[in-house]
Image (cartoon, rainbow, N blue to C red; front, side, top):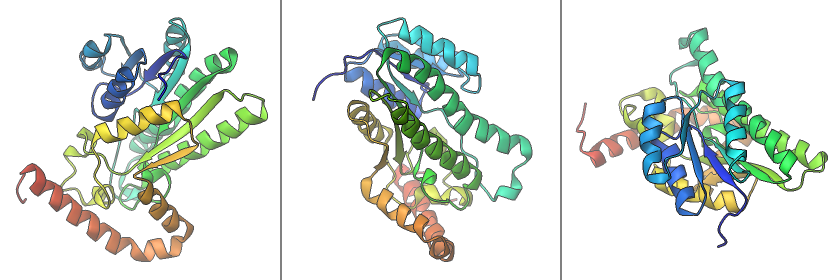
Length: 275
């Protein structure tokens, strides 16, 4: 496989979990990586073994995203922007107040839009580049118990594919937008969710390591595709459920029962014991 040679990579939400793993995989693959996160001290620690380049970034701040894109472009061009920053809330949609709903949408959807558009402003001018939006299988099918989260991720899928089509219609053939849609990942986002019935959907399939998803992200960086699911078979499974919403609703109790069993398995695996 060829090594990247088209500039710097930016990763948001890179202080830990999947973001840090993606940054490490890209660094190992030859990318100069700028790690960003809203926690400036944590992201500086994460960046130390990966070249030491980090910046504080709240993805809700459009101007800050543009400044990071300009900084990255100043070091040999902006080759890759990975929108990984995200937050998870669980429970029925009516249990979340307006501030919570707004925060989820602002970070997961509007924040990724800010990063995408900041990157594209540079990439369209230079004639090449790739934006990878880390979504979730919840962006491909409605996930009971994670409804507001899933809604924000559905918005990101629609934005990404529509933006890719707009780029092609505008004649930009060297600029790409991809969606990476992994199954549940054992990161801090799920570490405290083993007893949360609202998070059961994240435990219904293959619980992935961040390193596995990061390796797929690095391959996707080299070979853009509009939508990639990890693992592939789960993408096909949830797309089938999405195509049959009535069936999906009727199967929801069985699906969530499987998720609760997955939570119990993971608790035994890590030795947390029953609660």
